[in-house]
Image 1 (cartoon, rainbow, N blue to C red):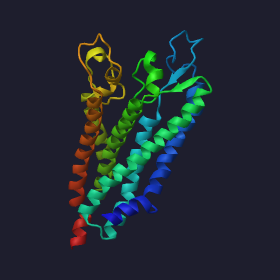
Image 2 (cartoon, rainbow, N blue to C red):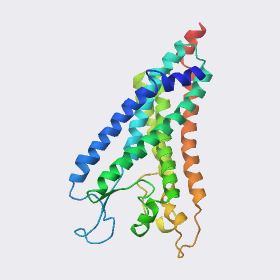
Image 3 (cartoon, rainbow, N blue to C red):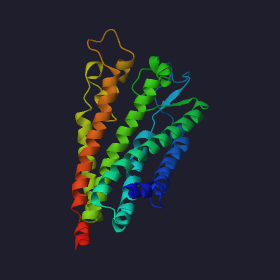
Length: 284
């Protein structure tokens, strides 16, 4: 397993390939943020609620953390499809390869979160010079009156990292299924199975998107956990609320849900890899 993990992080078709393809996706998103979004006549609600002509800032929704996670999932699937045959031919056991893939996913997600935060920071600095404000996912659902406080709140920043892990592991879940089915059957079946897994993950999001309290009629368009929409009330409670939201519960809920999604897909990945056709050929 050590050699498999080492190749995934240091080999020619490992982390470098992942960074190349996911970085290309982030570069495309950066160009979109620089050229297309600012050219729109309407980019979001005023950052400070006044008339549009006198607003000091306009909010711009952050696409790095959402669409960027899609690019990262595609890059992860591509890397797995490349390094798995190398590991099999190199004599890595299937058990070690399955366990190593979990370690690789955690490591790659940490690197990707760092890339996402750097892209958001650079874009936010550039936007600030032109009267625009880039929202991160955790801040997008906090009221304007509290937004300036939330932007620099370490708890909000940490929660945004948790959301990023949620998104990345969700798309990594589809990636590991793609890699396993490609190894077990063929590429066409891999694309179909990954599409089905993405749809099931979407349904899982929808089940967790229901909100209570003040958000009972709101649609969480991120389709993530209800605690994302309730972050504002966990950090800055409204005395008119009839129930209490705990910040630690929000964090645990988001992290537990993302690991449930990934572990379910990882179980499918393990079963397919341990029963793949290459195993039979090696035994023969």
